[in-house]
Image (tube, rainbow over all chains, first blue to last red; front, side):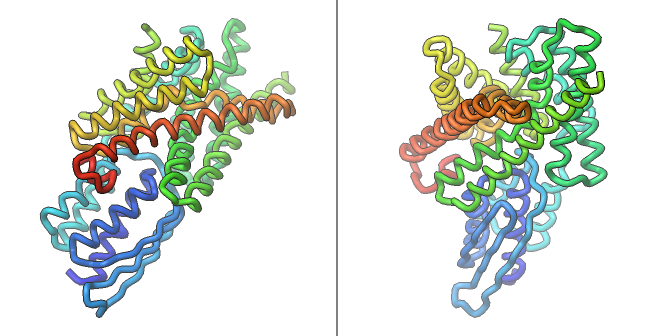
Length: 252
Length: 147
């Protein structure tokens, strides 16, 4: 395997991690570790929006550098787990380029849950969180339906390829409008508990936690960027909810 | 008691949305339950959200690090799912809601509450990570420590 191919594998693994919501130190560590298991020296700089690596073989005959731009980030813990195992196994047993590439491809295309399972999970989680913030069972049932609606909406928008924060805005609007309409029929429901329960899954808990973890590991640029991302997500969500509720209030 | 079950299922189903593999789902649920129990105990004793969140985060962190060592996966899997019940989502939401309603004094108070909660959460998990790293046998990097 030549230097280019090794760097390629390392960047691919880093890209998978970063796209799945791993912390910066984890991405940098994995890239360095993969390069090291093939006997390369490597220096890497990772931001939430891109990966830069520069690797050289021991005699410095050949130096390659890669830049990989990362655009979309989600949370997929299964991929983090599998890339972790992959890079750990490389230290013990070196794979060929084709083997490593196909293994990474397999990790990337792995689907753990079917869509109906994720739909149900989203709804039940909304139900649980509504009850957890002391909503009544009826609030919970409304949140269940709202969670289902938001899941469908996000699936649809994911396929249509909306921009990053606009889907949060629309999800918030949908949650606000839905809760408002349901309360119109059943006045005893608590509007805000339904809304909070059903958008709990969209709150950027991972982004905020990663942001502070990055700061503590010294990745200051990434930390500030992630904090901004979290702030934008929350603002989009909140503005959406406010917009939805206000709109219906004015109309009625 | 029923709240502990709700926290369990909340984390369990949140973990499905985050694509946690099937063999780890149950532990992700227990992680959320551990966090909520600690949060609940502290909150009913002190009435301080930040302290309660910190305690919850410590519980989630300790649970995650133990499980990571036991079944050899990254601790993040359990900590990300486990913090869900104690994420300061409600105050974050309230902040923006107050801004939308032009209630800036309340918005400021809620914003500080959110940042405190998020900080308490992250520092709780960081504390645990750091302590576990110091006492791990290899004592090299966090990653190796979960071997």
